[in-house]
Length: 364
Image (cartoon, rainbow, N blue to C red; front, side, top):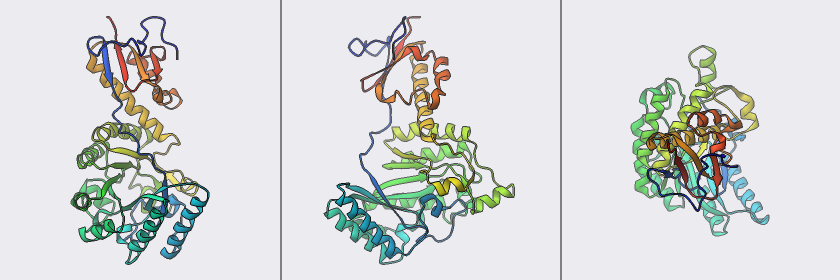
């Protein structure tokens, strides 16, 4: 993009030192971990009941099946990938409560994962589970067998919301589980579900603060949707529940990203992965094919706006790392008017091969 005819952003070799002439700043997002996930869905296995929002069989595209078949398919699939020259993969157990699978299944899965790791096909093993299914003795056994990370389906730290959703545990269980995971030496991941019955953006902001304080390695933020066949669908039909709208959700998620990033947390998912059967079953909720892009762009806009305010002078232009060229102005350039209102129309923004942003100050 060409600089404006007047007051162009300095080139990479002529940038002045930070101070009255402008501000340097970096994007706070931690670097991504380069790994490919091989998901293994133990759909509904180990679950003590069905959560009001859950349509896991549609979300994963995998119907419940015997664990022996799941184990065989996992091993066969990874060895077939090896023959094709693909891998290694980070093996991830999703869709059920891995730590609550009946014995000896957790150890059988991990024993096969260890063999695949020895063959060079598995680099790391993670699982998702419920906070009330993380006793220290079981975590110790699973860690010794090769488990590397536990993702806790915390959903929220609000006890009233957890009760309304029928989760069967309170926030204290989530805090204890996070501590147990850490004490065992396992990496920690957290999953939050904004928009549950009784939840509001202010409550979600508190959830984010508490999640950041726990300093997990990763977090997933899944806005609550209403799939057919769930209790939430019945509640919505009866007028007892209405999900957040898309604008509210994008705003809340965008506000959540910077505090998590600054705490060193990698946000690995915004919204649920697309699955045709699940998409077709969604009756209501904040769904958009570019949700992650829109949220990340809004978060970046808020970061830039904060730097403009901190500079205390009108901006003359912005030099941005080239990697953000497709993100800065948002999906379909929806944020271009907001940048113009900051004094940064497109003609005053330049993308360069540089690691940080530089916000140039106006002489006025």
